[in-house]
Image (cartoon, rainbow, N blue to C red):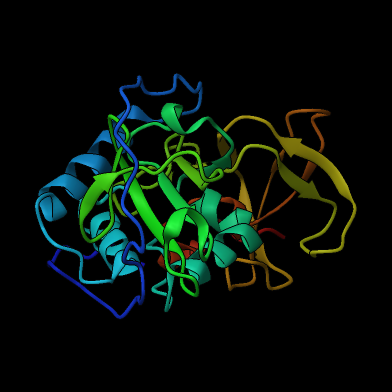
Length: 270
């Protein structure tokens, strides 16, 4: 998928208004997570403020977050446009490979240490948010966050789900992934991505990728994976130096690349 440049793209993501008043704002510093991509995080947060600061809520929190991410150019491929905040949270929890592919990592942090540009999700009824739809917003700093409006991040009512922008993923429609002069694909990948003996979901794991930027020597079709296609990439693991297969959902390649890697210069494996 390509990042959309037109604004605003608003789809019906219902029921995100507050049902109680926000708690007082507290001063804080951003987290110093080793994997946090501050450039992308600031880009996302600044875009959220530019779009929504000072605006009243339309009860379309997920649409506001989607507009921010797509127009910032800092999350690629685009996140799916789902009907509600809780549907997004459920999807994110069930698809860690897709989250990594978009350049984010799920983590747990104290609320006052969540870095700028992170996506936080609140379950239905949590912190006074909608009893059916929950809430989603983007951290903009100083205990503030924006969805389709901006306000204080609530505290004292449980921990939100946290997706932090990390590594070299996203931001540029796949510029972080390219076939270079050695004829290999160099691309961002999820930390700990498993290498399997065959391009099959149930094949034995022979190694893993510990770095978040790796090379891949060729590709082949295999089982359909969480990325929604059947493209797998072959590389060498970091733990044992074993050669194996990584599902396309663990790479941050654009959908168009996964559709035909050969057309982008990557050889098909024998």
